[in-house]
Image (cartoon, rainbow, N blue to C red; front, side):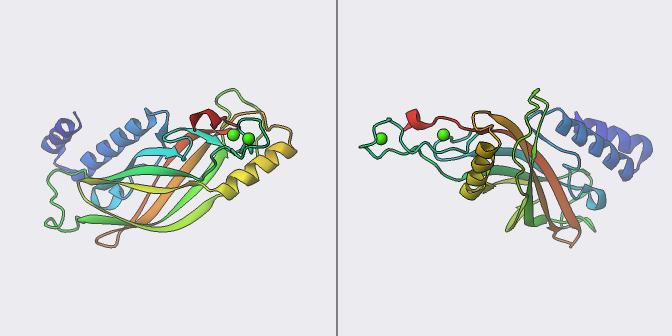
Length: 228
Ligand SMILES: [Ca+2]
Ligand SMILES: [Ca+2]
């Protein structure tokens, strides 16, 4: 549908700018339609070259909660309740598998051949911002979580996608969260947050690229003892 609409616009107006604008609108609308992942500005890089970087998937998980939006911030030191046996709950950092893709929005452009059209994108840093969400009706103010920034080089060729495993929440962050939750008397409450990933870098011609998307997650004391 997108490709058909694009050709129609070229025929009528013969202007790549119009086509590009249409595509940008469609991409932003597509991003808004997904409740789990999305954010304004998801189509990074497109304004300059017609090359669009998108974050397609953010899939967090830990050893005991693989591929889960649940984050266990409290480790039970004794799963079976028998102090003579050593069986702490599995407790590990949460990482995220993130799929990024790069597409060429203007079909008449050939990356590396048409002047000004890059062949790949290199992302060099990413930042994660955490914010509590209240859209689930939960009005309990939760602990603040500090934003983090990482240097990571991810090269993606145009018309390909790539899945990388990146940070989500480190053990130190979980311990900090649980300590604050206990202090605030909300350690028995599951709270909802979003993690917003912002990637920056440049394309193969040196144009700046920025793309961001968010992922919702729940954090609290999840019991993962039985999964062992
Ligand atoms: Ca035990
Ligand atoms: Ca737990």
